[in-house]
Length: 63
Ligand SMILES: [Zn+2]
Image (tube, rainbow, N blue to C red; front, side, top):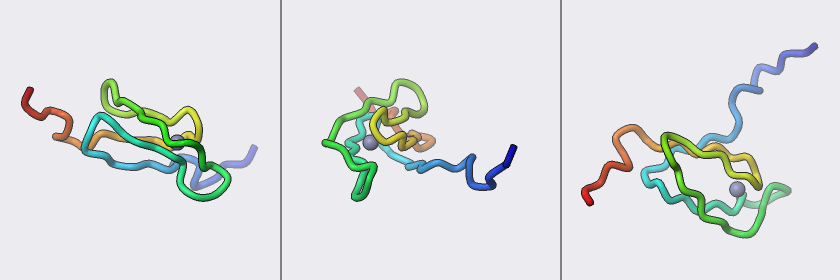
């Protein structure tokens, strides 16, 4: 088995809203833009596996 030092850090993006638009960016992981909703603290894009993390203190805007 080989441990890759960078394996624990997939693409992770801090966001400040529970609604995130993801298109995978340029390159092989690009995909049509989809909207992701962060249910709790984070969400992983089912297309490109980008990891979106809700920034601490965000997502609690007034109703
Ligand atoms: Zn994506």
